[in-house]
Amino acid sequence: MVTLDRIRLTGLLPKAPHIAGLSIQVARVTRETFHAVVQSPPMARRATVPRATEAELLRAAAFRRELRRFLQRTETVARQAGLTSQRYDLLLTVASAGEVRITELCDLLHLQQTAVTELVKRTEEAGLLRRRQSAKDGRVWLLELTREGERRLMQAFGALRDDRRALAAAFRDVDRSFHAASR
Image (cartoon, rainbow, N blue to C red; front, top):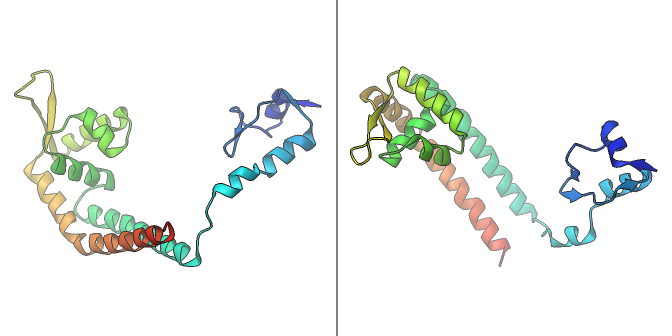
């Protein structure tokens, strides 16, 4: 018999007792039982996963390729406009959101507050963004683009017009495929 602590020490089990979504809820297991649990998920789990058709897989793969191509192209175009892809995302989000606080940006960008604060600070230092005090609440600081920030954003945004259309078409194709499969 091998205890869970012993398995953890030998590297067979991570610190959290979850492996591929399975919870190990026993205090002691044999090495054979441990491998059997890890290698064979419960039957109920297998039955609930619908099988994808070959057409669905092809459309999903095509969408992923188009998404990767779009992200790579965005990085290239942003760099040509003198932006990092993170600054492009920040400027695009601020421009589209209107008046926005750093705390709201965290949700919009799906980043931690420390990362957003540092990104805003660097972008502000580069002269692309500025903070201004809210007229409604003097404790609140709002972000807005500078003219240079807007110029660079529009340069990159305009260059990506056809790329956005191609990505939207790929998304529509995969969406139709998944809707058709669920009927």
